[in-house]
Structure formats: structure tokens, C-alpha cells
Amino acid sequence: AAALLNLAVTTIYEKTSEKIIPHYKHGKKIMFKKSELLAWVESRRVKTIHEIRQEAVSQTLKVRR
Image (cartoon, rainbow, N blue to C red; front, side, top):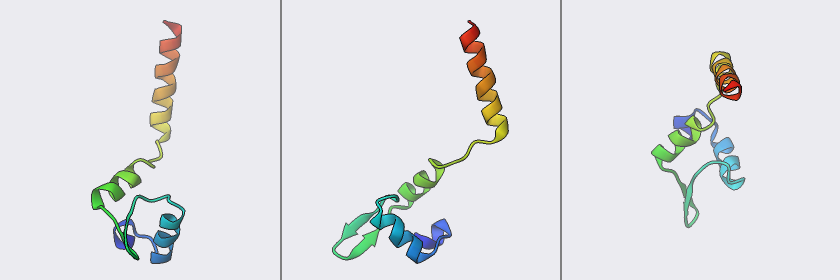
């Protein structure tokens, strides 16, 4: 998980203990599903200024109708 996300192992442990990152526990082992980690990363995507402006224009046009 640390290598896939390019994070330190200690950061991964912190995120699992705070229940921030999706994981599974089997005894003392912490396990991850690659697909869930990638989905977690994608869900935190920051929109570009262009996307934000497009949404603003779109919302403005909806209000005017």
C-alpha cells in the first residue's frame, strides 16, 4: 500500500488507525485491496480551475431557466 500510494509506511499505519484509508485486519496483519486504494485516491481528486468555472457557468444557466 505504501509503495502504491507513494507514502511512508508510518503514514499508512496512521491512516489505518484513524480509519481514513480502506483496509482489512486479519489478526495483527493489515491488508488492502488495490482497487479500493485506487478508488480512495480517485475520490480525493481536486478539480481544476477550468472544471470549477465550467460548473459555475452550468449552475448559473440552470438558475436562469
